[in-house]
Length: 456
Image 1 (cartoon, rainbow, N blue to C red):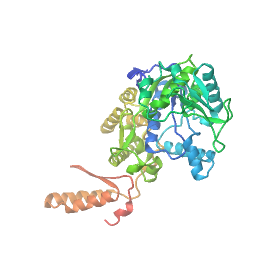
Image 2: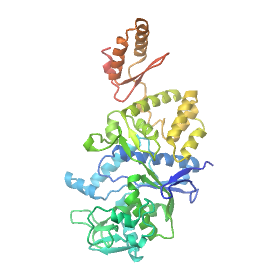
Image 3: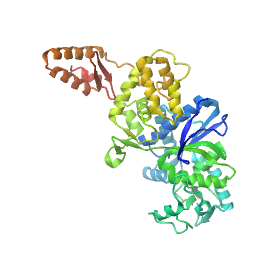
Image 4: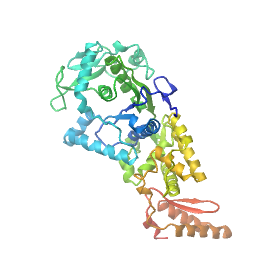
């Protein structure tokens, strides 16, 4: 059996993955807060951990892997959106949950085995909070319940590599007067009349963010499970707080054995932000004609622990590659298994860039069956994602021949003005122009408009 190696954030080393129970490999990934469309950065962990899910299923068998990813549907951002729009909270969260699943499905992500909603697990959260109070790890203050970091001080901060004293010294936020320690975090907070709330031993209120994942992962995966994942922006405080409250509530378990965190996303070399005008959602790209399979390919060209830079150039190149691969594999059956070198690359801490490099080699040597099986292992070249790559309505062969003839004439006359004119027109129509010594190729890109060719 292939040995998977994963970089464990907790140990800061790459380790052999040894599941607690090979018959029931368990993974939990923090999901979205459902109040709006998922932006491109939200999609990166979905794709990263989808590949890991597929790899685990490939090695251990689909029936032996359990993947849970939650929806946070109780949150102050959701409350604010409801107040702004005048809509009901349940209506907003139901709609945005469906949006999320549809958009991630367009990127080829499989749906997890469990997709728990926080509001369905309030009783489990209340039970867990009460247990933490009984064990001396939490306390009630002014209608709030807070986790007492001092009760876990020797181990708090191990995931992120921060000490409690350093975190307190570096704090730049006003500390609530009812906190015993500035680092104590909220497990339960009171709700106003116009806010969602549930009855509890501490009055009507709602859970803090961190307790949600601890309660849901415990209910679905147990005291100990194999992998916990998410973006590295969640490492502190969210994942740090999850570890503290889970290990204190269930000391008989180890919580998550392996912690994986993906790096953030940039756009054209800059951090994505609305102020820079480079902020967009997955749906924005899809509506602009960028295929979901292309988005997935661009993501997987960069290792998950490195910052990923989304560029239009990468999208164009990814589309061209996928068109060639789909043409090469059209009408054939995939090999019985992905190429060994592709599986080995993925098993080496999800080296998707290495896997794609090997797939380029398979395409070059014409091993279409292995290429197809390998691509499908990482969620590409599937039938579900292939509609975009169907042949364009216009026959481009005549245009390719015309450009080739113009180039041949230009080589004789040394006048390349007609070649340049045609290339500019084809590019403006949304075609990628590829010219080698022996061939001319026109490849439709995002936004290809056949009508613009009529003027030629």
